[in-house]
Amino acid sequence: MLRGWQCLRNFERLIVKDKDQAGHIGVRIGGAVNIFAVVLVLAVPARGQSDPPPFKDFTFKRVTPPKPGQARRITIQIDPEEQAAAVAPPPATPRDDAFEDDWFWKDISPALDASGPGRLQQALKLLTAAPMGIRPPAPSLEVLRAIADAHGADILRRSVGTRVSPALVLAVIGVESSGRAAAVSTKGATGLMQLMPDTAARFAVRDATDPVQNIAGGVAYLDWLLGEFGGDPLLALAAYNAGEGALRSHDGVPPYSETRAYVPKVLAAWQVARLLCATPPELISDGCVFSIGGKG
Image (tube, rainbow, N blue to C red; front, side):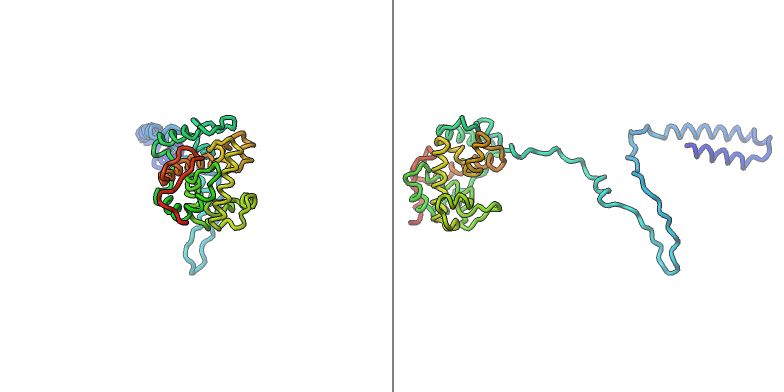
């Protein structure tokens, strides 16, 4: 606006040479200047209403004329990373995925002192009542039937005399490997029941990719965990995923997103697996004879 005012005054001095004419023309120009000033004031918005953010400091670079035969070229100084940061949306509030499955653990206590075999039915009722968007996905009946067809006899044979229902073994295999004997996780867990190397060695499994040995080691570990945690299937499953040491150090199910999601996943798979038994088991320790007649 100041520059506009100065331009008009300069214009007045240039076109008015006669003092008598200055008074007459000055009145008209002065009026025009006043009107122009009012328009400028009204046209300038209040600071902060619609102004873009100020430009950051930058340095000028003197550019020499191009040499004969060279095309004219302008170098624009732009930092791509700086520009991306300037237009990038603000980061969202970080999400704590460690408790993304606490919908289950809000009603089921993760504490060690809450252990007991009777909590299975409470957990299954909670899963059944959960909305579809919250209820964890379970392996299909067809997938579990195929696993039972391939390994049902070994599952039945290894679970006899233990606290582990064959339906639970089938559910664990469905969640852990989907029946792939050669499956290896990024952490090194191997085989149908995804045994870690230390666990495999602990239960005399020499080749974790061998289905017979893997099932034997997995069933033995589950049976030991059920005895260690008072027959509580929820704590036993959490320890199968995270290790019994993690439960002891946290006085219950640790706040690991994988572990807290794992327990309801296996229970959801259990609800499907038990349907393949001639007499569907009610407890984790109940026996089961697969009605589809596994090999062996």
